[in-house]
Image 1 (cartoon, rainbow, N blue to C red):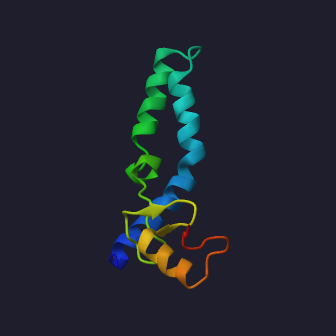
Image 2 (cartoon, rainbow, N blue to C red):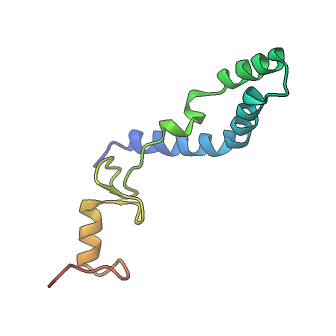
Length: 101
């Protein structure tokens, strides 16, 4: 299981990305606006660069909601492969069962 600090750090990043999403989009649009003057574009770029680094969605890492494991993650279920298998075998995941042919 991942350290609690790593899980909390990732949750903090998710909140920050959501908080600054509109502002980031507006500044990106202002930076690439062909009708804006060069000074306006540079001002928008300075404001964009002053945003917190953790507000960038690129810094997010998908982690298992139960264990915090960063690898073997299934987006559809929000779990790592290990926990997904456990829950599937217990019958906790609707519509999912072990393959047999």
